Image 1 (cartoon, helix red, strand yellow):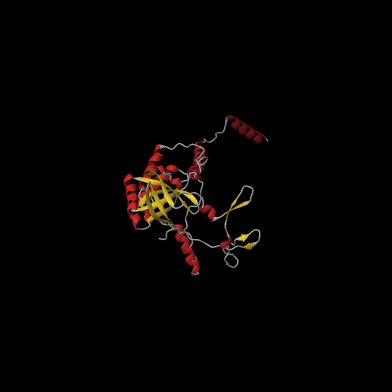
Image 2 (image 1 turned 90 degrees about the horizontal axis):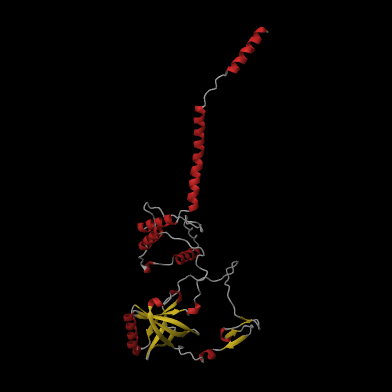
Length: 327
C-alpha cells in the first residue's frame, strides 16, 4: 500500500516514526457526464471570471471569501507557517474506554505502519499496551490542510487510526424523533427479541454490494450489445402503509427460522395492511346480508295465512245474486 503521510506518533516522551495508509477503498461504479445527443464527454473547465479564459492548474491557488464577497488570497507558505504542533505528529492526548467514542464521530480509517527499523520496538510497545488495557487512544493530527481528531486501536496486530469528526460537527437529533408517543406492548417486544435472536449471527465477510453488482452487469450487457435483464417481478414498491405489526413480526420470525427467506410453507412472509383486513371483513358481511334477507322473505311468505271470506262479503254476494234473479 502507498503511504499518504509520513510523521510520528507522540506517546508521552516516546516518538514512533510511522507511515499512514488508507485502510479502505471505494468500489462504487463511477459514471462520466456525456452529451445525450451524441455521447460526447462533458468536462468541467476552470475559467477565470475576470479574464474569461481557462486557467491551468499551475496558476490556481487558494482564497478565502469574506462576508462582503471579497477574496483574501492564502498561499501554501502562509499555511505552512502556522504554529500547528500536529503538522507532522499524531499526538495522543488521552486513553479512554471504547464505549466513550460516539459511533456518529467515526470517519475514514487508516493503517499505521512503522517507518524504519528503530520504530519497531516503540510501535510494538504501544500496540501491546492498547491490547492489554482494552482502551483506545484519542489523538490529534493534521492532514490535507486541517487539524483533525483521531482514534487509535489495534486491528490484527496493526495499529489502525479512525478519523473522528469534532464534537461540534455532529448535529443534534432535535426534531428527528416521532412527535407522537406510541405504546409498545410486551408481546410485540418479545417477538422483536425473537427476531433479533434469529438474525443475530452473520458472517460479515459474506456481505456484498448487490447494487454495484447489478450496475456492473448492466454496463457489461450494454457494452456487448445485449438486452439488460428485466428486473425481478413481484417486488413490493408500495410504501407508507399502516401495518399489522404483530403479524409482520410473526411472519418475519418464521421466515428467518426457515433459513430461505420464506415461511413454514415456503411462502414469503408478507406485511398485512390493517386497512386491507378491515375491508375484507366488511365485504364478507355485505355478501352474507342479502342471503339472510332472502331467507327471511321466504320464511315470511310461508307463514302468511290464506285470507278467508268475511261475513260481510258473503252477504253482499247473496244480495247481488237475488237482484240478478229478480231482474
